[in-house]
Length: 112
Image (cartoon, rainbow, N blue to C red; front, side):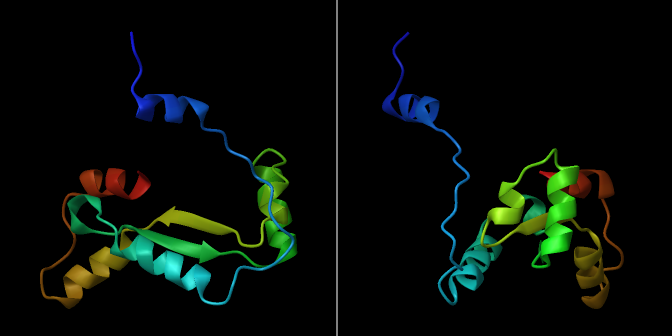
């Protein structure tokens, strides 16, 4: 079977977690987060919260809990994405729509 150029490219993909020992350019992190917020989302909700972890001790604990992944400690930035239905539920209540319904579907959307 002949692979397409896209499939060939996907098969060549590798994750390399080596980072330059310098912070991100000013404003870059905020711009990247804004792009993520503007992306399409399932069920027209963004059912997640993003935590920026800056304290070295906390990053060290997370790295150890993740199986000794030292890149968590070495990366210039480390973000944790958490499924979060509280925010969308609050928005529904604030808009007068009542509580969020369809928790199973929205829960799956949040995790994905």
